[in-house]
Image 1 (spheres, rainbow, N blue to C red):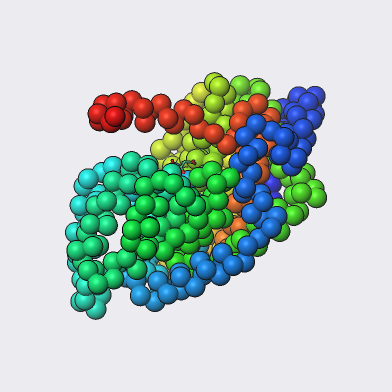
Image 2: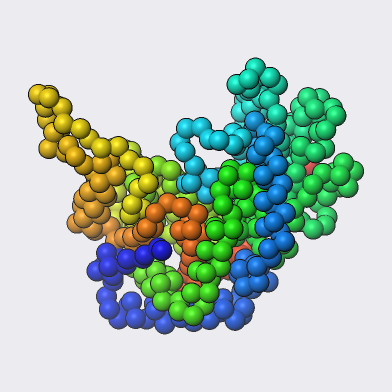
Length: 429
Ligand code: PA5
């Protein structure tokens, strides 16, 4: 279960302003539910949950299981919505160090030649049994033309073709649109296995399609639980959207009060990538027409020792979103030290998780005292169940909140601007 607490946002909002914003949120939710808002041709992320397709889950699971048995390394080649969701879930639900499945490496999400060269050098190194590494690659691109992904795929495909002359085509799996785009031409030519990205789901809303689910399954995570918990959350919020309305209202009312920055933060370092997914989901959806809050991300307590000063006492244009986890499945207990040389015996018997929780509570209070309104989102535990719930909650919240702002949540016209300038400099016809 996830819980939303807006108390520390509401104390900064006048009751009338909150009530006004709440009415706007109710209207916005209806626009989503009835498919009447701007960009409503992009609501496939809801239909996916309203009418689950078990055959696709089955297909994803069986290919992922086969790859988990054969691969030393699984490369996920994609950018933006084509990789952030998978990375978020895999990092949230995996060990920090090592795993019993293939090592998952992300590529195609930037244009560092050094990164690619280092990657290829690493792939050339033998595995732990001193044998050549077995590498599989999942290229993910809805358009099939995104430069960062396409260029990296070029390099990696060439390396794989040379390395695995007998079965390279079985090692490359493409996730792309049903038809059109350069990737589909390659699929036709080489017979690569293919997963389809539904035409009515944009990148940042696609984590519960094969875009996210296939790499997540290769990461050994139970995608059925993840997916069906999102389905349950969808059903719950269709019946009673209260949680989403409360959150969207608080955020919208704070925006109306001049808050232009949302620091999305967590005390759990394994949720750093989930913050990155949220940053894209919110940022690319709301940042239009001179509106929206810039979604910054921070990981505490690490970043309390860097930007914590600014958050406590800098420009007062920000709110904060805390993503917290109530109980940890693993932690370390502080033991009593003879002599108490570091003066920390007063903490003996406590776990790191318990101490971290007090650090969260203390920070929350300090930042509230420093006039930073906040919303607290709590997951009972870090598992596929709660993360599935969390994903759909935020997808819906994003759509509802964007309609409150009066912007289309599903397009990203501004992203084209840098591409146009870049392609001109690169001499593209
Ligand atoms: O959310 C989005 O739409 C974007 O971030 C895209 O996912 C990203 O630009 C990658 O696009 P594509 O999948 O077409 O390569």
